[in-house]
Amino acid sequence: MKHSLQQTGSLRQELKINPRLYQAMDLLYMPLLDLQQHLKQELLNNPFLEMVEPDDDEEAEADNPVEPGSEMEVPAGDQPEVPEAKESATGDDGMNWEEVLQEGFDDEGPREERDQREYFEPVSVERRDLGDHLDEQIQLLELTPRQARIIAEIAGNINDDGYLALPLEEIVEALNEEVRKAAEAAGRSIEGLPMVTLPEAEQMLETVQGLDPAGVGARSLRECLLLQLKDQGRQGTMTWRMVDECFEELIAHRWGEISRKLGLQSQEVQAAADEVAKLDPKPGLRYSGASDNYIIPDLVVEKIDGRYHIFLNDTNLPRLKLSRSYQEIARDKKKFDAEHKEFIASRLNSANWMIQAIEQRRQTMLKVMHYIVERQRDFFERGVQYLKPLTLREVAEVIGMHESTVSRVTNEKFVQTPRGVLPLKFFFSSGLATTGGDDVSARGIKDQIAKMVENEDPKRPLTDQAIVNILKKSGVVIARRTVAKYRDQLGVLSARMRKRV
Image (cartoon, rainbow, N blue to C red; front, side, top):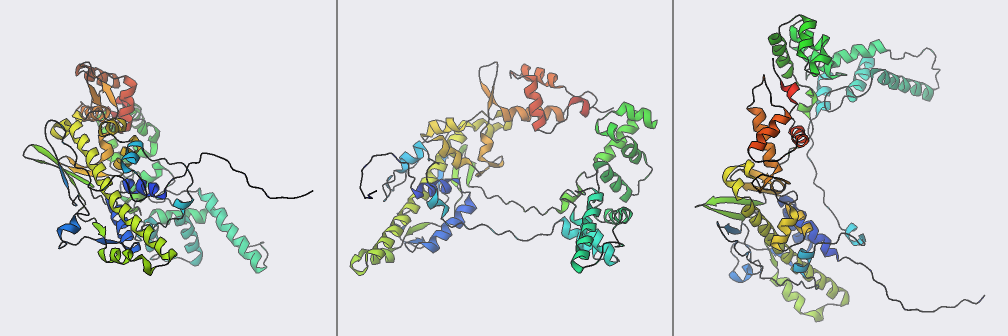
């Protein structure tokens, strides 16, 4: 068989994504703090970028047409035009930014280049959690080495809520398995080994349950509540008896059955139940190792002289410009070979692209927030009950951008308003029809339901159907099952469970 080489030509369509599209997606998605760190990293990596200093001349400031903390005014009337970036809409690499923002980003395609990029994950500061708190107390106890090993195994199986995560029998079996493995490794017979017994584990568990916080090491909610009552010295009280003898009736709010079983008046049963409600069902969470989340708003909305003004809260964001010194060096191309020329061209294009991308991000955020303020003016003036239904598609159609662009701009972004610091997603919710032909936001309906329940007569709580009837009188058409769904989302119990005697 004769082997040969030959060339053939063919045409085919192939989808390739510019890596800068992925970077543009990330820039739109980044909250303010993440963007600040990203720009600082870019300043370190790209010599053609440098920060604009306060004493720079007007020519340097012209490289960044939108100042940090830039403002947009929203009058009560027609929408003002959004100031456009002075940069060209087409980058040095031929990327048309207006087209990208209007048509959205394509998330499909090869991702090798994106995966090769270096990410810098934030490093969290170590914090004391429940395990550390228990270990500190255990070290102060006078224990034999055997007891210390048992109690350490028990404490290690307590979850973040403060409950024992495994049955005590499994913990004993795990300890005994360690003893067997140690004997086999030492070449000793397992006959006659001092195995851990269940009574020993029970005794050590009781020791753990005596530690702070009260209720830690419990195996059930009932035991957790009893441990807390014991810590308060309330054994034998009516509250103790209710948890100990009538726990199933208590969690079902069957006050009549508890009254008959304990021989108490209805008012005494309710008073004892109120005392139980003051106990902590998850005592371990007070020592949770979860980190605090600090929010810095990306936008600020202020009402000045009857008009709402929108500011970009980016005064701490590095302002970028092209380095003059490196531009001068790059102009003399005779000094560099082909490899260096390619490096200089890529870095210069990347610097131009970064400045333009940040500007487009600012303009897009202002456009989106401007329409939100216009649409939700009643909310800013009168409160959450006047929040109007709003969707990402509606905003995208009005400002002339793709829905995915609006989604990225609003995701994990916060705005400081006269009514508090709110996520941009707060302003987006579905709507319900009214008899007047207008729509009302589902979030506003939830707020009305919450206020109804808060102001109801506790002896005659409102049923779901009663809430439906009240809302119907105000012109809101809503089904009973929808009211039940909203009530569950608010964490409000049913009328039977809320009823007090």
